[in-house]
Length: 176
Image (cartoon, rainbow, N blue to C red):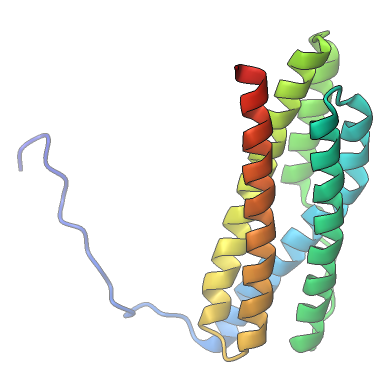
């Protein structure tokens, strides 16, 4: 094979598909994880409102908090649909990302605008993580028999994408 050629991709066409019990187990792990993340963000995001200097950024964070509350309500409904309860997670990855951003901004002695842009980079990173999680959960839910679950995940995914777009628009304000 020439050095610039990629090896042929193997497409499994479902030969390794998981059964419903396995899919549900993985779905619950992810639901518990994103639920923990969203609860953490409800505590963390208000501190960013206080530190933001641009009113549009403050308002975007407030809107995101309101969206998170709705997303959590939908996730609580998912637990009910599945006859499950939230199993607490530590969500250490997200907590460390938020702590690192907080410490970095404080230690660098940034101007207000520099702080806002750094905050936006951080917020967009968090939204990307949430979007990926909701996309995977949506894919898993599509393979499960409960279509209501699929619909609620699509709504949460759409809200996360809307937040991401808003943060991206605000970011551009700092760059022009």
